Image: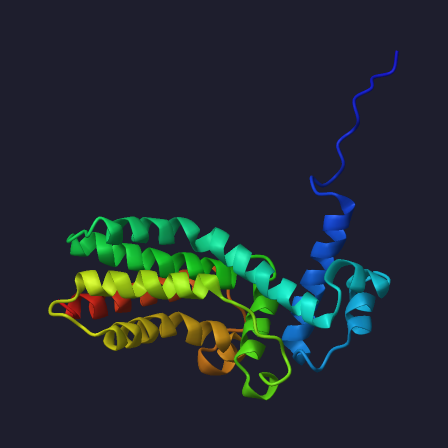
Length: 228
């Protein structure tokens, strides 16, 4: 008697979700390379090897696809940084005065973000997509999307700095301090296509990422300690 058990498919995801994910990956790469206005839905469909109507089926239009790309990047970044952010939020909520733990929590957030930015699948195309997001020439045409993770990171970082700092820094001071500390990572992320010129690296290897993370951790620790 033949077994009624179905064989497992190669993926745990339904085929429709596989197609949707492939379209998003392809769109992130093309939007990153050419900007929102520089690529058509037909071009994305051809590169993803799907019929053009598939994009309308899954995303309605080009704007919907772009927002889905943003949401995909946000979800992946949240998964990567979420545990470190949750730990930092717990320290802030408990009004911890342990400066060493607070600094370690801040550095852990940057570590997890660095892993996502440089060591995750499709990290290079995501970096180009984010760089296009910050390009003033494309800001007028591309859709604007909410960025809850960005707000959460800012709130965590300013909360940690407030807990570490002596005196009573203003909200603006806290935001500036967080922006300058986090900017260390963003500079490397947004200029990764120039790493060969700036640093002499032709690619970001695991060893080089370890150097970046160690350097940022050291510099962040020094800066945060100075606020005492």
